[in-house]
Length: 47
Image (cartoon, rainbow, N blue to C red; front, side, top):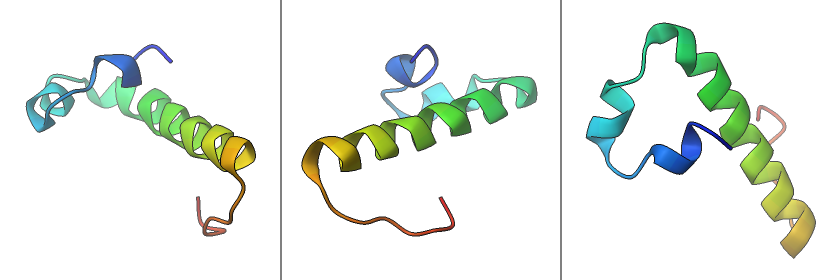
C-alpha cells in the first residue's frame, strides 16, 4: 500500500491528485478484503 500508508489526516487526502484517487480506492478495497479474510466477517457487496 503506497498511498494509503501516507494518509493520516483529512488534509493528506486533499494533497492527492485526481489521477491518484482510483489507486487510493483500490488500496482501501484491498485493505478491507484482507482484514475480512484475516478476521472473518462480512462486508457489503458494493465494495
